[in-house]
Image (cartoon, rainbow, N blue to C red; front, side):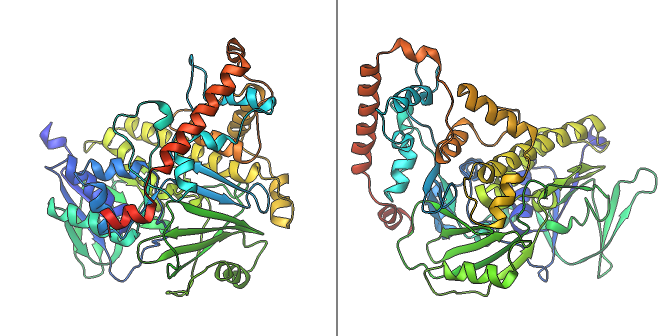
Length: 497
């Protein structure tokens, strides 16, 4: 048994993916010898500065506290994403980390709300979400550890400097014995008998041997694609955007506890506030706008002075056909890329690491485990893809060639089925290996004015007057609670800055 256990793990590439992987594996597999190879001469993409709430569970498992991470990464708090001009120009909706209202008798709150909406007796759906109400009033507090009801449940994530977060992960990993080698890889040598990666050869001639190799080399996929020829599944037929321009600017107003995504004529723009600056970017379809025009659109929609030069990168939305090949597992951008509309890049790093730990191999690299990993990864990436496509598909915009083309673009059947079931019965289909839970789908449906044709008949067991009074009390309770909570800026000033 001992002779067949993986002893040497080699991680290729640093950045967020590489150092998160190193930190997690060194935390859970303390007898492993882990080496991370990265070159100081090769930069990282470093675009993702907004996260999902699962990041807090990730670093919490390493023993790190929220406030400490906020301090170390110049971070701010994120209650969700505000979507401007997506459904229509001059329209705004919010996707929170949290629930809506209270379920009764096993029936989701939105069915009760829908009955009153059809009678014109209810206010906006977002009024029954604590996460929405906090975010749109620029308020912040940490959730109650023992919420008195589901009405009080919300979650939060971080905006942070990704390079500082990678530094934090590196410090943790190196303190746990991870060895870092600064060097460029000249070639990858395979075992002629089984096709496994045997060792790396650096430009200085040094050889790095390993039992398991983890590819965190970014878009280029040095091991998984260039060496092992995994193949790439291109999703451009559903997702038209293929380029992004990122730039940093001065923060000229108090940081808001939300990411802002603003739809434009041929894509969308992100604004992410940190303590010391603001991150900005324009994701767009090069078929409909030139790089220079896209840069102008971005700069014209930034309030403060720029502090960096605009950085352009190109991408093809999709995933590796096999995330695990032979004795190589790809994590992060090496495994695939989807535009950061829902801050999924770091979340997919987390789930990649989680699945690797779940199926951690021995030296034989059992094919059944590899197949299971690849199947889970495929499903997970497709589920995220569908949720991103949903944002575009539900939009009512037809004011440019980009949005008109989206209207004509077929969507995956898995997504079409979900939409059909929601429209027909208000049923929220949940597949295996989904990052986004039913409340997130409700936020998108409501934000784009998509509602079921009917509601659950159990709702009719309650009188209209009773439902109307109950929902009014819910809304009043939320507004009263939020009124007593400090601003996000005050929270940061008191606990972080």
